Image (cartoon, rainbow, N blue to C red; front, side):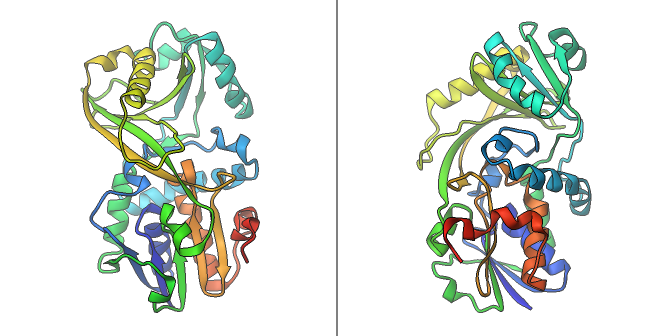
Length: 338
């Protein structure tokens, strides 16, 4: 079977790689295959199925957990992609922050930790931190390494081409995984949601866990890499521009330094702006749009986490016509599309 995948981000590449692994003749169409314009390039790579998304769309939780379970094998198949299973420390600076974060911790059935217990695990944390929790099943991966590895798997199958109409694709089946560009190709309601992310660099070892915290009402996550880089994110703005702003950078840095004062000596190496592809209910669109056309888009904050399960579900659907019932709540039909 000849399959055209429109979109060369982390979702499109993973779908293409899975289809090729199962014997399909795959071509991935990407307007900038050597570029870094997708949401994956900005993403920190937290694999956290118990986050805020489960409150927005409860049916999303089983999908997030199922994909999280696939990540160890998926990462191993790609080589060194920065996969780390040290877990996440949720932390809260003030009493109001504790109230905010405690909802997530309770939902995840995590045992509360005192400030001193948190600092036993992560000495660089501020002594002002009041409480927190440890999520042992949360992991991280470097999306930039994942995309590089997937491009290697699909060497010779990624074509530098902008697709403006699906009729341009000569294939037995088409998968639209074009992120924020999916709406123009399909009519599905996918909007860009701006996010600003910072990258800091210092001596390796300041942090060993992902930190997911609140500081004076500002939510921030800190994702440490083995080489000393720490990703700090992320704003969430209903905007379409690509401009980094002083206010966004200030809010991220202030919250990060409140939680981990030692970051003040780190070099600020990168300020990046990207756009998450969001849907009206902030859940992904995975399924058949019409005969021969399938969609894998709109993953919002969970694109990296949902990569392996999306690839599996879409490949099942394209090659066999059916897929796991876990995808039933995420079809294009919920937006009035066949």
